[in-house]
Amino acid sequence: MSDWTRNTKKIGELATGHELTIPVYRFASTDSNAPRVYIQANVHGAEVQGNAVIFQLMKQLERLELKGDITLVPLANPLGINQKSGEFTLGRFDPITGVNWNREYQDLTPSLSVWFEAHKHLPTEQLIAAYRQSLLDSCHQQLDSPWGVTTGRRLALSLQLMAHEADIVLDLHTGPKSCKHLYCPEYTRDAAGLFSIPCVLMMPNEFGGAMDEAAFYPWWQLADYAVSRGMDMTPAVEAFTLELGSQERIDMQDAADDCEGILAFLANRGVIKADIEPKAMARYSCALADYRKFHSPMGGLVEYLAAPGKPLSAGEPLVRILRPDRFGKSDQQQTFCLPEDSIPVLHFASASVYQGTELYKVMTKYTRLS
Image 1 (cartoon, rainbow, N blue to C red):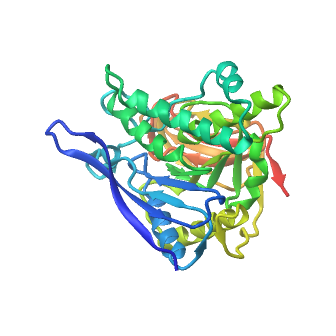
Image 2 (tube, rainbow, N blue to C red):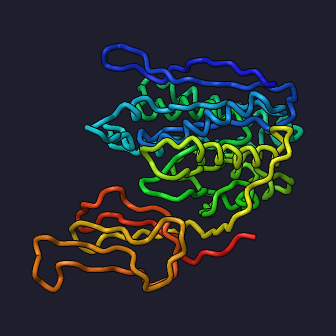
């Protein structure tokens, strides 16, 4: 049996002076050499299923033998979670600045031409520890800036502080109407088959403002620079975004299945002592550059015809758009198809759209993962 602790972390203050806090759960191990893990959920307000997955993970971790420390943060963004309008949760963007909550993280990579030269004499383990500390120090410096930081940036840096303590970072999200899919960095593409997730988007080893990129990119940069200087080094951190179906839903059985998939990955990476294998399934991947958006060619009312997660041949119907204002005319109803084979991954939640609305995201030029 593994014990856990619960603490709260302050991530800001409301206009009334009330503190904004989030719960932080920690499972501690005795093996300091095993990978440390950080898992968060619900940075976007409507994306609640990750909380159910963390709940199921905690139930399983209580009975498993841990080799590495695990930190779990459900309800990571109370501002987004509580941003409601009627029956809908709007919390995808900071209402003050309009910035996506998941694009506020910072690339804290130091100037490697300076930092590496000053630390290259250290043994690898000490060099990694020093580099990790430099990332943490940069977080604190930004949070303590005499100029202050925005509400969204404060939240992101507060979460990033915990993520930079870890060797494995999992950020749990969902789509609007979506199948499960994984964002996987190119440098660790072998991990794609270790999660029980059928669709994989292979990301370039670059930074774009999301949590997974903020976690892995500095380490990729360090390893790449070290290799260019003749040192043998691989990135010390892996980070992934797991998209666990559709938003505004909780499904505890589905969460148990996703929990099992995450445990299979953690077992493979030596974080837990357990014999758990990823689920046998057809897995497909494509480069992130081949993950295409289909925008509505006209305004109207949309019938989504292609099911997320199911391969769609070129020329098969994708959407049908109804125009009640054109009743009796030849264009009162139109069906649209894609010109190439694809796998629809997610589609817009609403049936009422403007011309130009992003209706689908689809994988193109995809391949079957072995």
